[in-house]
Amino acid sequence: MNDETLSQALNLLGEKIREERKRRNKTQDEFSLATGIGPKHIGAIENGKKNIQAETILKLRYAGLDINYILDDVIETLKEEGKNIIEDNQ
Image (cartoon, rainbow, N blue to C red; front, top):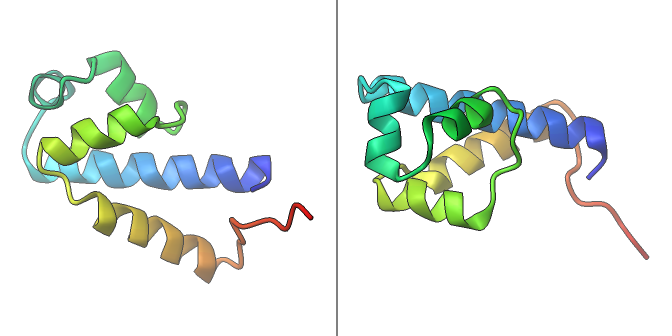
């Protein structure tokens, strides 16, 4: 995945996580307590500034977020815009 597509994916992912947090009527501090992820880290994720690690994904899922739905929506948006996240490295 090139840098531009990765940046766009991270921004979309952050937007979806922010939407889910707001749908639950949680502040970043409340969401932090529910997920075990620091509020600054949550802010960085929501703003597309942080690449999410597996541990963070697991914490979000453990807190009840439908990660599959969020990721599917991000991937569908990228596909609609003609972005290919799979690069042939051969």
